[in-house]
Length: 221
Image (tube, rainbow, N blue to C red; front, top):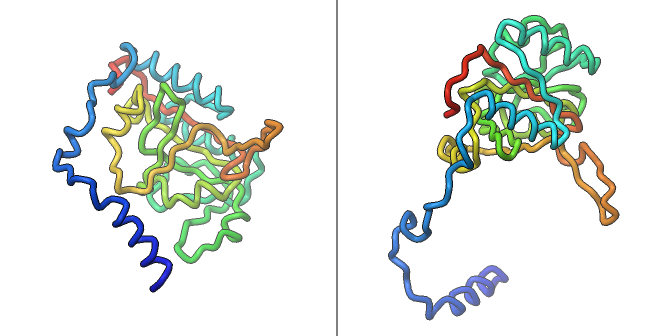
């Protein structure tokens, strides 16, 4: 008998007297909680997102679609990035003004190869104002999870207002739980028992979020 068989046998004995619960999952828990806190205009929602992103030490930029390529060019130039990782579905106009060599993510790329890339530029799936969180779901303009975890500098573009929501419940309603979700609240950071903060341990040391808006003051979705 293997260790696996022993463990599973103990589990079966432990739950032998537990009655089956045929309550549908949707009815098992009350879900009458607030889906967002208060009402905000698009401008107020985006301001809250920017405030909370900055609180997590992300660097926030605001621009419009026409200026976006030049802003990305300046951000990469300021870092001195010679090699930039781009997902396969990144809109080509985003990088149209940038000079660095573009490295495309490939399945055969190793972590060592990715570590030589100075920056990565991606889109996102959704941004949550109340928590200052960016969520990636592996979409074409975001690529695989590892490309946003290994390079030291991440530029993430958020479309306003389409990709901005007020709260986590509203974000969950937009996300597919079967996709590889990465939740990002600021640059990677950790601290030891003495609370000394160290950045760049589990992901990029620098996160720059670009809020791209064509204007308007509709209600945030």
